[in-house]
Length: 182
View: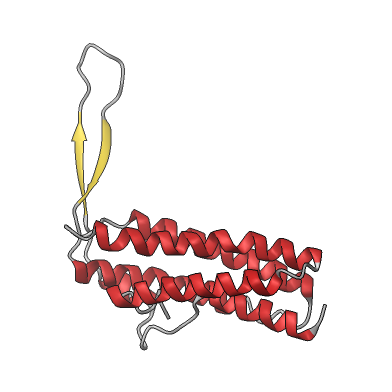
Protein backbone atom coordinates (compact mmCIF):
# COMPACT_ATOMS: atom_id res chain seq x y z
CA UNK A 1 0.00 0.00 0.00
CA UNK A 2 1.36 3.38 -0.88
CA UNK A 3 2.11 6.16 1.53
CA UNK A 4 -0.59 8.28 -0.18
CA UNK A 5 -3.30 5.71 0.53
CA UNK A 6 -2.24 5.49 4.16
CA UNK A 7 -2.38 9.27 4.39
CA UNK A 8 -5.88 9.23 2.90
CA UNK A 9 -6.93 6.54 5.38
CA UNK A 10 -5.56 8.50 8.30
CA UNK A 11 -7.23 11.67 7.04
CA UNK A 12 -10.44 9.66 6.86
CA UNK A 13 -9.92 8.54 10.43
CA UNK A 14 -9.69 12.14 11.52
CA UNK A 15 -12.70 13.08 9.42
CA UNK A 16 -14.78 10.28 10.92
CA UNK A 17 -14.04 11.36 14.44
CA UNK A 18 -14.26 15.09 13.83
CA UNK A 19 -11.64 15.68 16.50
CA UNK A 20 -11.69 19.09 18.09
CA UNK A 21 -11.60 21.04 21.29
CA UNK A 22 -14.40 22.41 23.38
CA UNK A 23 -13.02 25.89 23.86
CA UNK A 24 -11.27 24.95 27.10
CA UNK A 25 -14.22 23.31 28.82
CA UNK A 26 -13.76 19.77 30.09
CA UNK A 27 -16.60 17.35 29.51
CA UNK A 28 -16.63 16.46 33.19
CA UNK A 29 -17.13 20.09 34.12
CA UNK A 30 -20.03 20.49 31.75
CA UNK A 31 -21.72 17.32 32.90
CA UNK A 32 -21.20 18.11 36.57
CA UNK A 33 -22.83 21.52 36.24
CA UNK A 34 -25.80 20.34 34.18
CA UNK A 35 -28.97 19.96 36.25
CA UNK A 36 -30.82 16.68 36.21
CA UNK A 37 -33.61 16.56 33.67
CA UNK A 38 -35.26 13.25 34.49
CA UNK A 39 -38.36 12.96 36.64
CA UNK A 40 -39.05 9.64 38.32
CA UNK A 41 -42.57 8.40 38.77
CA UNK A 42 -43.78 5.25 40.43
CA UNK A 43 -46.81 3.28 39.35
CA UNK A 44 -48.30 0.38 41.25
CA UNK A 45 -49.91 -2.68 39.75
CA UNK A 46 -53.31 -3.81 41.08
CA UNK A 47 -53.07 -5.64 44.40
CA UNK A 48 -54.65 -8.78 42.91
CA UNK A 49 -51.48 -9.59 40.97
CA UNK A 50 -48.02 -10.59 42.10
CA UNK A 51 -46.27 -8.06 39.84
CA UNK A 52 -44.10 -5.72 41.93
CA UNK A 53 -44.33 -1.93 41.52
CA UNK A 54 -42.26 -0.53 38.65
CA UNK A 55 -40.34 2.70 38.38
CA UNK A 56 -40.16 4.58 35.09
CA UNK A 57 -38.22 7.64 34.12
CA UNK A 58 -39.96 10.28 32.03
CA UNK A 59 -37.52 12.71 30.47
CA UNK A 60 -38.49 16.35 30.53
CA UNK A 61 -37.62 18.25 27.36
CA UNK A 62 -34.42 20.25 27.60
CA UNK A 63 -34.06 23.84 26.58
CA UNK A 64 -32.07 24.24 23.40
CA UNK A 65 -29.16 25.73 25.37
CA UNK A 66 -29.14 22.82 27.82
CA UNK A 67 -29.33 20.33 24.94
CA UNK A 68 -26.38 21.99 23.18
CA UNK A 69 -24.36 22.02 26.41
CA UNK A 70 -25.01 18.34 27.14
CA UNK A 71 -24.51 17.24 23.53
CA UNK A 72 -21.22 19.10 23.25
CA UNK A 73 -20.07 17.45 26.50
CA UNK A 74 -20.89 14.02 25.04
CA UNK A 75 -18.98 14.91 21.87
CA UNK A 76 -15.98 16.08 23.88
CA UNK A 77 -15.78 12.62 25.45
CA UNK A 78 -15.88 11.18 21.91
CA UNK A 79 -13.12 13.50 20.76
CA UNK A 80 -10.97 12.61 23.78
CA UNK A 81 -11.41 8.87 23.13
CA UNK A 82 -10.48 9.27 19.49
CA UNK A 83 -7.45 11.40 20.32
CA UNK A 84 -6.30 8.66 22.72
CA UNK A 85 -6.19 6.18 19.82
CA UNK A 86 -3.05 7.85 18.52
CA UNK A 87 -1.54 7.71 15.04
CA UNK A 88 -1.47 4.41 13.13
CA UNK A 89 1.55 5.59 11.17
CA UNK A 90 2.01 3.60 7.98
CA UNK A 91 0.68 0.35 9.42
CA UNK A 92 -2.34 -0.61 7.30
CA UNK A 93 -3.70 -3.07 9.87
CA UNK A 94 -3.54 -0.40 12.58
CA UNK A 95 -5.22 2.13 10.29
CA UNK A 96 -8.06 -0.32 9.57
CA UNK A 97 -8.41 -1.12 13.26
CA UNK A 98 -8.44 2.58 14.07
CA UNK A 99 -11.20 3.24 11.54
CA UNK A 100 -13.27 0.49 13.17
CA UNK A 101 -12.64 1.88 16.64
CA UNK A 102 -13.55 5.38 15.52
CA UNK A 103 -16.75 4.09 13.96
CA UNK A 104 -17.64 2.37 17.25
CA UNK A 105 -16.87 5.49 19.29
CA UNK A 106 -18.87 7.69 16.92
CA UNK A 107 -21.78 5.23 16.88
CA UNK A 108 -21.84 5.09 20.68
CA UNK A 109 -21.81 8.88 20.80
CA UNK A 110 -24.73 9.08 18.39
CA UNK A 111 -26.72 6.69 20.59
CA UNK A 112 -26.05 8.95 23.58
CA UNK A 113 -27.03 12.06 21.62
CA UNK A 114 -30.27 10.45 20.50
CA UNK A 115 -31.00 9.53 24.13
CA UNK A 116 -30.96 13.17 25.21
CA UNK A 117 -34.42 14.69 25.56
CA UNK A 118 -35.03 16.80 22.47
CA UNK A 119 -35.89 20.43 23.08
CA UNK A 120 -39.49 21.29 22.30
CA UNK A 121 -39.91 21.96 18.60
CA UNK A 122 -36.36 20.94 17.72
CA UNK A 123 -36.85 17.42 16.37
CA UNK A 124 -37.06 18.69 12.77
CA UNK A 125 -33.68 20.41 13.21
CA UNK A 126 -31.92 17.53 14.98
CA UNK A 127 -33.19 14.58 12.94
CA UNK A 128 -31.26 15.61 9.77
CA UNK A 129 -28.06 16.07 11.80
CA UNK A 130 -28.36 12.53 13.16
CA UNK A 131 -29.10 11.24 9.64
CA UNK A 132 -25.93 12.87 8.34
CA UNK A 133 -23.88 11.14 11.03
CA UNK A 134 -25.62 7.86 10.13
CA UNK A 135 -24.41 8.40 6.54
CA UNK A 136 -20.84 8.89 7.78
CA UNK A 137 -21.04 5.68 9.79
CA UNK A 138 -22.39 3.81 6.77
CA UNK A 139 -19.39 5.00 4.73
CA UNK A 140 -16.81 3.39 6.99
CA UNK A 141 -17.26 -0.34 6.24
CA UNK A 142 -16.92 0.12 2.45
CA UNK A 143 -13.73 2.13 3.03
CA UNK A 144 -12.33 -0.61 5.28
CA UNK A 145 -13.25 -3.30 2.75
CA UNK A 146 -11.63 -1.34 -0.09
CA UNK A 147 -8.43 -0.86 1.91
CA UNK A 148 -8.27 -4.57 2.74
CA UNK A 149 -8.82 -5.49 -0.89
CA UNK A 150 -6.42 -2.87 -2.22
CA UNK A 151 -9.31 -1.69 -4.37
CA UNK A 152 -8.92 1.25 -6.72
CA UNK A 153 -12.21 2.61 -5.33
CA UNK A 154 -10.54 3.74 -2.10
CA UNK A 155 -10.26 7.36 -3.22
CA UNK A 156 -13.89 7.51 -4.36
CA UNK A 157 -15.08 6.00 -1.08
CA UNK A 158 -12.89 8.35 0.94
CA UNK A 159 -14.26 11.32 -1.02
CA UNK A 160 -17.80 10.23 -0.12
CA UNK A 161 -16.81 9.79 3.53
CA UNK A 162 -15.21 13.23 3.52
CA UNK A 163 -18.25 14.87 1.87
CA UNK A 164 -20.65 13.20 4.31
CA UNK A 165 -18.46 14.20 7.26
CA UNK A 166 -18.31 17.80 6.06
CA UNK A 167 -22.12 17.85 5.75
CA UNK A 168 -22.54 16.40 9.26
CA UNK A 169 -20.07 18.90 10.70
CA UNK A 170 -21.71 21.85 8.95
CA UNK A 171 -25.17 20.83 10.18
CA UNK A 172 -23.86 20.28 13.73
CA UNK A 173 -22.08 23.65 13.79
CA UNK A 174 -25.11 25.45 12.40
CA UNK A 175 -27.20 24.11 15.29
CA UNK A 176 -24.55 25.09 17.86
CA UNK A 177 -23.02 21.66 18.35
CA UNK A 178 -19.56 23.07 17.79
CA UNK A 179 -17.67 20.32 19.62
CA UNK A 180 -19.59 17.66 17.69
CA UNK A 181 -18.98 19.45 14.42
CA UNK A 182 -15.35 20.40 14.94
